[in-house]
Image (cartoon, rainbow, N blue to C red; front, side, top):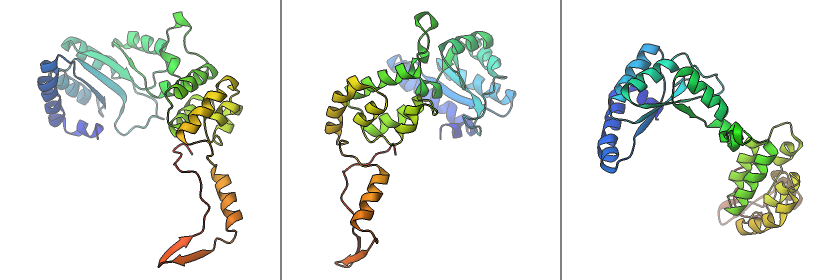
Length: 255
């Protein structure tokens, strides 16, 4: 929906002008905008010039067109132009798209004359990418996963969300990654990753979240087959009923 505003620049500029007037100036808050590239450099330049006149303090340019997916490499040919336009207008300019870590962002900023970088996908895989080289740089995936597990247990994070993010952080070819898909709760994943010192805390969080006795899909199917091997159906009070075993309450978004 946000990218759709690129097709209605008048509306986009009106929205930003209103935000600057009613929020930015009133409460002394900087208003920024993030856009994608248009089809031609001239079209992008015209839009950026208009946006900078709305009173915004920052502009982030995602170096892909609206039609491009994240698997397609970012386009940087227009980046210097966008940075120049923003600088002339006194607007901070950040670039987004295929920025790997802090050092990479700093190099791109220097090469293309922009003020910094925005990182999304790479940060999901490894949140430590923002750590400067002087402090050790990005950490290995095992250290990152351990720190994330400690944080997730401390805040009693929803198990499905934790499992999803662990899948982003762990290399697919690692032994632990292959077992992650079968992990049913915090205790199980601590055993898979050899995080023995976190097991007791994991048990407590599982009990609190109700994930202690969660069955895998394979186990649910096996239990259903054992209870009702022929999948017999019966009618009760005019409704079609299927005899299935009761399983633990809750939905696991990670499976």
